[in-house]
Length: 386
Image 1: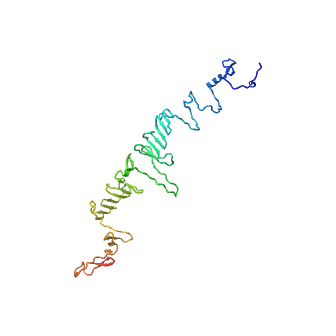
Image 2: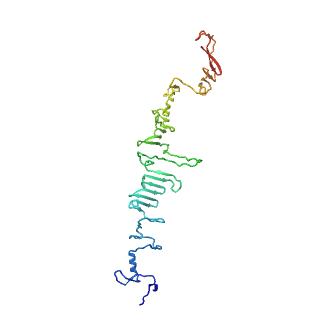
């Protein structure tokens, strides 16, 4: 029979399992015949593809390493890029997460909650309008709640089931870092800034209290108090050198309470006003005191620390007036002029009578050496003096 090249053979139909192919086997047997089914079995046992070009997949699932389509997951080693959603109809408990290790990972327990678990315990829970840290339910360590999860600008609530402390920064340490709690501000020279409001806790009858404390050697000390001590604002008593309320940059100028019964103003560490029940002392030199502060007496005494009470101004004449009534215009005045006394609004009482006046003695012989003027409601009268 004459030799014929393969290209010269007549084209056949689709390969069938029973089609025959010549084969020279590695053991030196041949040529022998093999079927298409034998070739398929050989190629399926250990295929090796080198830069293949694959067409459209014939199926919608992959099962590798002995997995069964419809019941096993797809295991991938290394990074995997997914261009669309990865959906799962499985419902795993937090102790057995869907993604991660056997007891740590991410779980969608139901259609409205996603949990992150570590060692079978939830450390983060995301629910509509809520973010819980520390526990998925019950009493989480910290929760963020929105009163309207779907609306932009809904209020945010920081929630904890028990009494809570909000601390900025790490735990107390010997070298603490400064912290700042700040509100949003407006920018621009012509922009009016917003109002920053802190709403304190209260009750039906406006009960409740507010305190600001400062830690001293690790122990909180109250520096501002409303409603805890006496129902109003309370400040530390302080001292003349460290007042309870300091004014300005000078820490020794401000307001404090001496011995708990005095109201004091200090300037540079020196008391400039000292007030208590029935007493009012200015500069340690001039004081006002009631006659009997315990019984509410109305008498008022002017008590200077020295024997001189002076009204003095470098350019203007001074005058001390004593009015007849609190609302009238009648008064006597000691002025820094040449008169002994001035009266206004009325005249001196006329003490004249019918008796014959005599002058048979004087401090010195002769006429008075000075006639002292008195302003008698505009009329100048004189008192003789030797």
